[in-house]
Each structure stands twice: as structure tokens, then as C-alpha cells.
Length: 295
Image (cartoon, rainbow, N blue to C red; front, side):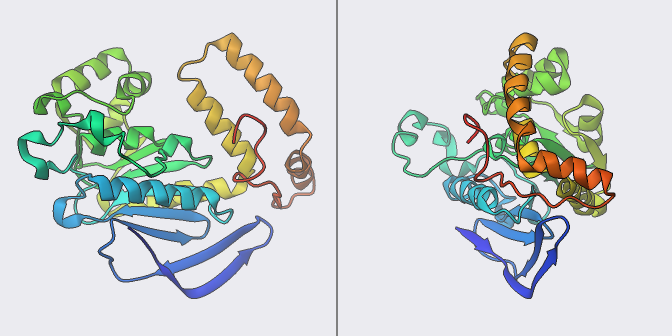
């Protein structure tokens, strides 16, 4: 269910940064997700353009598999999620008609694949919202660390307009990033906003012209190659824990991990590379070398 783009150019080495730059190219696939790695960035493209990338079980499983592949690949420093065609994701596939949302209490019990969400991956995940994003097409990118959108993209948490309610922790995340009042209006009314309006509300970090969206996302993702992978992973985990952690508890948590990370090879390398005015050569892996309790 995941189409991986084959290497046509081989591999080049960013020796001083410890990044393997692999370019994989292929024709558009009929698989649910296209997975491409280039210069330390994995791009995961939702690939049901004929259905505006509407979410179904196949896409759900393919996204988890793709995130796991990026998580386990030390050559990947950051991840971009975007959509094929004119849409990011038009929400749940409504092929089931009136019963689309029925029977969910049984569907989870019968699932036999390992679900993985963007916030669980120990690497930065950037949602590049290229077009319409509604329902789970909005709550899923809210689980990413950073969101950017095309200025004219139509975005909405439309659940209440379908007789449903928002999910994927939207009740917590949206009010944290946009404030309670903005979250209340967006989630309860189900109103549609443009990417530009979403940026004003804080739902996305920035809105850019659609033709520059992926370049903007790639430029943002490329910045992580200068940061130590384990330091990034630990920082991401603490940021998400901060959604439900008080100040004193977070200080205790930081102190514990700060002591551990200060004794690691990358802490020494970070200081030495700065003093010697060279790029760092990071050694630790975000897939294998996280402190206890972070794996």
C-alpha cells in the first residue's frame, strides 16, 4: 500500500552533516501513499487524487507504514505530508453512505496493524496542506508538529455539519494553538476558512502561494539537518507532553533528560563543531539511541 520511489541517481553523502541524500523517482503510483526521500527529507503524499485523497482504511494503514519507515531510517531527518492532485484530504471517504461512521466500536477491535500517528514519530513532521482539507483532513495535520497551507486552500473541522464530532484530540490541540474562543467557534460551527485565515488564527504556521508550498516545506525541513537527531526527538516529545503537563512537572522532566543528554557524544560534538567553526557530525540515532522512557 506504500509506493516507494526508486533511486535513479544513486546516493551522495553530506559527510559533515551525517545525512545520506537519496533521490527516488517514479511515475505516479496507484498505491495509497507515495514515499520519497531526498536530501534527508521524506515526503509522504496521500495518493487518492480521484477521490480528493479521501481517508479510508487503506490510506490509514499506508500512512502508518510510511511514518514507521521514515522513523526507522537514519537518513531521514524530517518528514513532509502532502496530498496528490488538487486536494490535501477531503475527509472520510463517504462511500458507505449514511452508515459511513457507524460500527466504529467494532472496527478498532478487528484491526491488526500497528497504528502510528505523526506526533509519535521522533522526527519533525510538517503538514503541507496544498488544497481542500476537511474533517480528518484537518484533524490529522493537527497531529503534525508544523503546518503550512496554500493561501487559498479551504480548511474546516466540518464534523458537526455531518452530524458527528471532532476527533484525534482536536478538542485539546486546536484550543492550544488557536485559543479557546477560536477553537470553540471552528469546532462547533464547522465553518470553512482559507489557508490565509487559518494562519491568522494560528491553526497553521504560515500560508503561502500554492505554487511555492512544497518548496517552502522543503526549505523548512532542510533546517533540521543542522540539529542533533536525538536532541530534536527529545524536544519534540517534551513539547507534546507539554499539552498536559504543568510547569513544575515539566521542569523536573527537563532536568532529568538534560543531565542524560549532556553526557552523550552529540553534546560534545555540538560544542566542538561550534568552537572549530565546522558543521557537526552527529552520531546518535533517533531510532535507536533515545533515553529510557522515550523509545
